[in-house]
Amino acid sequence: MSLTLLGEHHPLASAAEQLKLLADTHGHVSFKDRLEQAGLFPLRATGITVFQINVGKLCNQTCKHCHVDAGPDRTERMSRDTAALCMQALAMTDIPTVDLTGGAPELNPNFRWLVEQARGLGRHVMDRCNLSVLLIPSQADLAEFLAMHRVEIIASLPSYRASQTDAQRGDGMFEKSIEALRRLNQLGYGQPDSGLALNLVYNPVGAFLPPKQEAIEAQFRKELRARHGIEFTHLYTITNMPVSRYLEFLVESGNYDQYMERLATAFNPTAAASVMCRSMISIGWDGTLYDCDFNQMLELPVDHGSSSHIRDFDPLQLNQRQIVTRNHCYGCTAGSGSSCGGAVTMASPTK
Image (cartoon, rainbow, N blue to C red; front, side, top):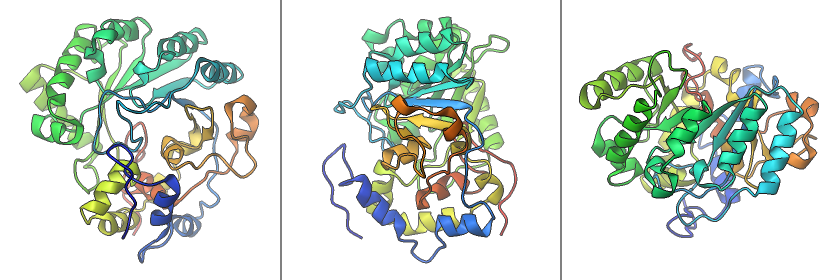
């Protein structure tokens, strides 16, 4: 298996090369064939309820599992003009939730403007926060800003142990995460009846599927409360997708074939019927439309006749579009399923 590496923050030569690797089923059934067997092909949208905006790839961290390949050296970022097109499109709809992601979305100069505009339209706003960004001097008032606008925070925390978190996110990131969580708790985030949701995200550190969401949530709640006095609302488990840095890790560690086989074997038709791409639209930093953030990183825009840029946003057309799928989609349909909001079903996969 050969991959052409470009450098520290560009693990694979191109999205096309990643797709070429993923196209080889290595003995398991392709995702398209598995959908057909389950009576789910073509997979279609069921109506957009989440308007996800990826504002760029700039981040103050360089996490080993990052499917965005984000980092401090990335220059891709959404302009004010494109951000304005996003808000114009949102205003045409009754989509209830705006999901802001990156990179570290807060580092985009238009982040706060987007929050204010979306809240002004009466929409619920979620911020996918890496926690450590709250401690950057230039973001000293960020936590207060988020609380003032009642923004839901979804924060990645791979473990309640420092060693495992630092192994995935970088040295010292666990302590920074704990400090940021304490600051958020002091503002009411994660506290009962505050209305300020603080949800954690758990990604496995190695080449395996996440445990049951309820079990790991209970464990995190017990350990973070006892060790650090931290409270949170919910914990979401998300399967690591074979995209970008995590795909590179799988290849370099010799785990790629085994991991893909594990995902394919654990295919769950119930999870496949409930995948997040059926109820969301993902907008890239340049305004291109995608079915999800993972397709965005593989440069697979919406297709099959749907408008593909935010300037041509057509809610009716996009609400019933055919979803673009490839073999990486096994990551969202294995076991209890995986989405930006965690597991999608409690049902066991059909063997």
